[in-house]
Every structure is written in structure tokens, then in C-alpha cells.
Length: 195
Image (cartoon, rainbow, N blue to C red; front, top):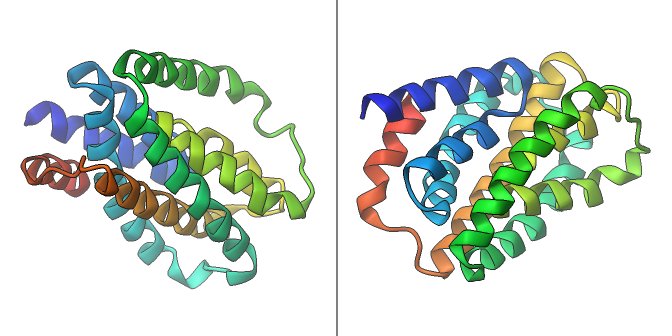
């Protein structure tokens, strides 16, 4: 329980300070403790709560014009990714999670150098959500995607939180449709979320 509390607090700190990164950290660590599907499921529940709290904190800076394309783009990507993740072998998911973690670390030096047109926000969010649902590693692309539209500061954090709420909500729906949401894991997810 202490380890879960430490992981939850660390993931929350990473995400709140940067707007992304906590999810890939959390999924990678949890995948080392349990199987990848359990890691994806528990993290989605915890990150849904964490991002809801972050959106509440930054609600005054919430911008529908910026957030709506990201939210709408996230819905199909998260749902399809969650359904695919439940159908993949655990060994393939482990490789995907490790690959996403390594890719996110390699991406750090380039993240502020990429500029995308604003119309890419919806389709880009679909890719982000798909990667989040299958590997937990889509968040490292969400930050640069939002920044390329000119979002910074509290407006950026609110938009990231709203898109992340869509991702995690539809991850949970996809995992639930496959029978992965187990009541025995709610306690662990709640501990992660509270921390």
C-alpha cells in the first residue's frame, strides 16, 4: 500500500507540473508489479479521478474552443485502444508499454520544437487516446499537441485535463466491456487516486 501511495503521489505531481507524463510513469511502474492489463485498468480509474481534480483546479481557464476538438478526438481512440488492449497477449502489451516509455523519454528534447496546425488537434487526440489506452503512453504527445495550438499555462493544463478525462472515461468503458473492471481493484485505484 505504501508503494501504491508513493506511485500515486509521484504520478499526480508529474502530471500537475507538466500536464502529462504521470500516466506513462504510473502504467510502467504498475506493469512491473502486476500484469499489463491490471496496470492499464487501475491507472485509468486513478487518472480519471486525478484529472477531474486538476480540471476543477483550473476550471477558470477552461476554454471550450480549444478543448472540444481534443475531447471529441479522444473518445474513439480511447475506446478502440481499450478494446484492442484487452484482446492482445500480455507479452505484447508489456513490450508496447516499455516501448511507449522509451519513446516518451526520447521525445522530451523534441517536444517543444514540433508545431502542428490547429486542425490536427482532433485527429492527433485520437492517436494520443489510442496510445494511452493500449500502453499508457499517449500523454507525452498530448502536451506538444496542445502547445502547438498556442495553449500554455493554466489554459493548457485545463485543456489537457479535459482531454484526459475523456481518455480515461472511455478507457474505463472499453475495459469494462471486456470484463476487466474488477471490484477488488477499486481499493487500489482509489488509493492511487487519493494520492
